[in-house]
Amino acid sequence: MNLFYLLMITCVLQIIAIYEIVLANEIQDSLGNLTTVHYQPEQVHLSFGEQPHDIIVTWSTVDDPGDSLVAYGENEEYTRLARGSRQRFTDGGSEHKSQYIHRVTLNNLKPSAKYIYNCGSSLGWSAKFAFRTVPEGSGWAPHVAIFGDMGNENAQSLTRLQQESQRGRYDAIVHVGDFAYDMNSDNGRVGDEFMRQIETIAAYTPYMVCPGNHEERYNFSHYRNRFSMPNDWENLFYSYNLGPIHFIGISTEVYYFLNYGMKSLIFQYNWLENDLKQATKQENRAKQPWIIVYGHRPMYCSNTDNDDCTHSETLTRVGWPFLHAFGLEDLFYNYGVDVEIWAHEHTYERLWPIYNYTVMNGSQAEPYRNPMAPVHIITGSAGCKEGRDNFVHNASYWSAFRSQDYGYTRLRAYNATHLHFEQVSDDQHGAIIDEFWLIKDKLDTYLSL
Ligand SMILES: [Fe+2]
Image (tube, rainbow, N blue to C red):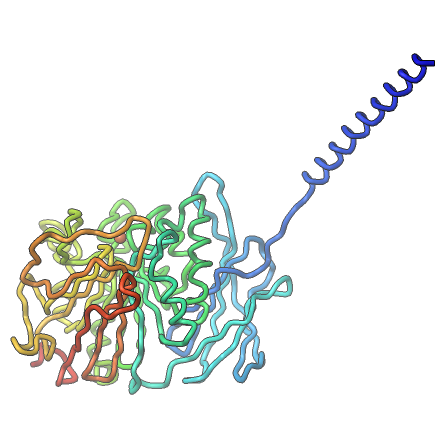
């Protein structure tokens, strides 16, 4: 009897063991066959199109939903539908991770109007977002937040910028290069996470950009693919008008990564000269008397890191070594550019009006009233994992104010004669640590004074 029961128990145990193995294999099989799809729009961001009443909506999906649509309208109603296109973008890393970048342009929007929108396709729509279009013409006062060098980690200014954007404070955001640190890192996941982080800013306010050295991998492919600036030269250089300002975004990187060839540098220089020619025509400058250029690497700086701006023959300033071709300082000076905004140094620095190492203040009492040369500002302290940079102990004669605080710059273009800049310190809970008025009594340029 005992032997019989023992055999029975052994058989039952064996049957249970076999059943468990079969079950485990079935679970494994079913897991192996599981697939996920990702048609849900994410990383939504806006930018100005060819004119500020054209808004480009850009977003990302992992899989191709077969369509790129934006439903939008005024008065909280989705009365219109716009269709765009999408491109597959594959990261250059070992995983070859790919995603679809969707772009839809909303053309000829009404000035000073609030629009709601969502983006997607029949396979998935985003949440509802909203934006306000800018007023018509040049007789209004744009308010712009400007900074560079904001990463995924230690993006210290991000929270304040998110709050201010959500409260409708700005007409535009300008990020002067160096994103995410880096967008290509971890097979592009760092870039994805960064673009998700800025969505509460960029899905509500046009987020205008230019490339920095941190975008260099795979020939700037993350930068070229993820953004949509108003030009067909892959976002490297472009211009647009905002109220009384003619903004020009450029790539300083074409001077430093010559391994990708000279074409971009030469194209940009020729395009810039032509754009400045147009912008300084009397009828155009009467509408946009302020010309503001932004690019990543400064011509001057008083930092200790041995970057090119710590040397006197900065490539962007004087052009190619020995030949001195394609230098930007002469070009900007000759066309009367008013302000040049840079980043790259993880600090804030305001310069006296300067040309070729000569300070050219308007007067001793009012240096920024009718200055005789462009004013340079370096604002690369938004916050990133590389931390802050240091300054040389004694500031140069051309340096007017310096700070190592994390923060960003606000620009308000009050009218044709008055620009106001202020520097927000995030370390000091939003305190304004520097501010100045740039005034020109003549609507033209310092060259005609
Ligand atoms: Fe940089």
